[in-house]
Length: 90
Image (cartoon, rainbow, N blue to C red; front, top):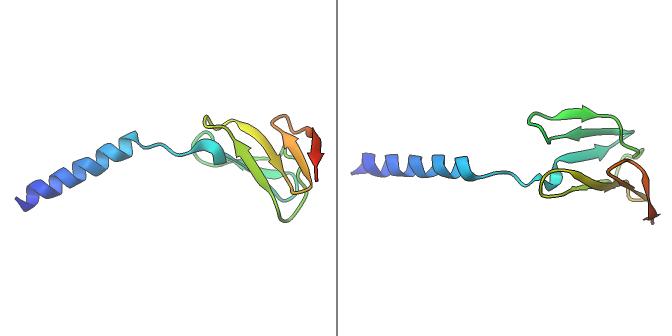
C-alpha cells in the first residue's frame, strides 16, 4: 500500500513538471552599463544592446511569449528596439 502511494505521488509530480511552464514576462533583464541577460532560449545569454546606464532602479517587461516590450532605468523608458519612447521620461 505504501509503495502504491509513493508511485502515485511520484507520477503526479512528474506529470505536473511536464505540463508546467514558466512565466516569460521576465525573460529579459537590463541593468548596469548597457548590460543585460536573456533567459528566452534556455541558459542565460549576455546581451549588450541595452541603453540603460545606471546602478539601480531598473525594470523590464516582456509579453507572455517572452518577447521584450519595454524597459526603464527609472528615468527613461526604452522600447523593444532600444529607442526612447515618446513621453517615456519621468
